[in-house]
Image 1 (cartoon, rainbow, N blue to C red):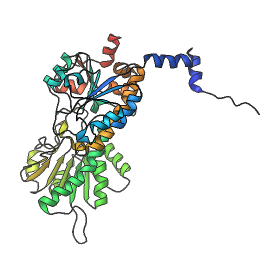
Image 2: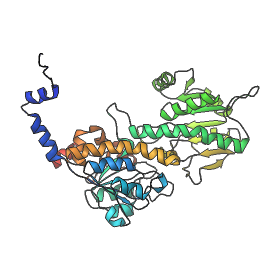
Image 3: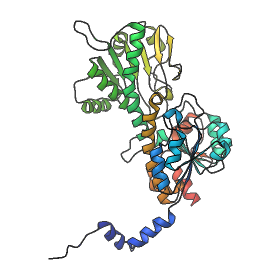
Image 4: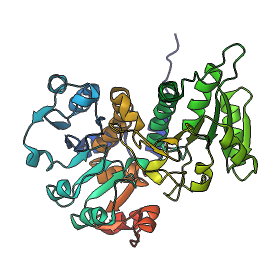
Length: 406
């Protein structure tokens, strides 16, 4: 019988470059690094999510990383301290010690008081929501020369934003159940179609992941809806993704004002690469809406697309203006904190495993350019263009800063 020779293209490539496979394996093993990671408890009472699940902790500790969690940090997400202990993490009440880890994982950005507990040069991954950031907070981060990665800025290999996408997917699936509850209580309306009774009208502003999820739920419930967006390409993508007929129009159309006045529910889910959502619906337009109309401003963390919007909270989610109910909760996925935490954990785990193999968080930035784009502060400088523009800070190129350090 002829002997079958195994062909390994990776080994062949290494050989052409004069690198033996065993040498490559030795380099990886030599440069692999155990990272001490902390998960402090969220100080915001309206934030229920946590960055790592117990399952993720098991995987990370099995790969040599050390995880320390503040006592009770996972309870609001449905994870007990014993879950984390069984997964191999340490649970501590020593807040000062927890903030001294090489890498800190949070959902909301750290407060100035929390930054004061950190050591110079530490790394932190958290949301970089403009609702929470401020010029003073940016200055405090840079004074400590922290490496700060904002989850909203991290890109995947296809140029998408995985954190925004997965949270938008969750938020989109929650909109219709929330709307159903509110409109039943306030107006006694059923959203869907009943024989002989017309269904509710809904207007969706935007054509991204949130609107896609809302549209699917609305179509299943028999709700009439129209989708408005500035970008024809995004509307085309949405129609293709949905796979069923949907009425789409451009926002600049004269039909928008009429559609808003006929709607019982309006969902604003426009996001901007510049960091500030354009105001599409003016205060005058809101004042002309029918009393009892329900507004959802899903992009309130970027300023909102309704002029009358103000950030609300999970504990007090709605307020009234001109007889119109506004729902402007910036962290809607926190309502299902267990599911949302599992989704975030999947993204975090992949990054940390790669960082460990390459020798640390900074080294990982060279290997994973998508996470490099997530850095908004590094070694005392703002490195993210929209953040610098928003807070009037000079911006340095992250790649040049990394080169100057090496």
